[in-house]
Length: 243
Image (cartoon, rainbow, N blue to C red; front, top):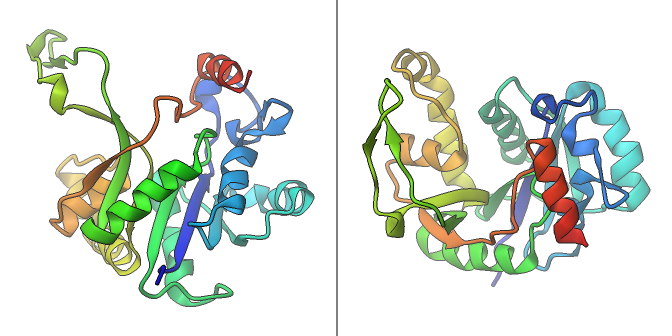
């Protein structure tokens, strides 16, 4: 029997690197807001049952009326205000999932955390992630790197060249057992002062599970088209993919 799957869609970015006054998640791509694409896949997916959408506090009414209601995204259960950092936004969504305030509570299912700025999510990716998380409890989408990678020292000189056969570029969704990711974020929040003092930078959800639950995270093949729209150049590439 399939377990319940809740998507957490992160769309609280500012768009500063896009050099635009419009937050990137609302910029038009092919005539539709950028976050429309991931929401559309979630809406049509046989894997995902519901969605918590995270956006800026000032944008909640706009997103509810102009995106969720306008395009009929019925799987969006809740829209919640994000925090200052990505991990703050994720935790706000997880607290909603844990609270039981959603239409159907996700007690022992899975949480799919996805960047709203990645428009090329597919049903195939969601299916591969679902099959992996059932076995490994935690998995992340990614792809093997194509280029040679160099690790740099503080002087800007190369100090190591890792074997690219073992180097992956990480994407989203990142998928976890519900109880596992909630507990991991609780520990992260509780120990926030310590890990900040140690200079730890939390850049994705897998790091939280790796560092606070000590659980290996399975890598699952995504797609080279599953890019994150961060700069104006990315938008040009995205338009090409759509064409």
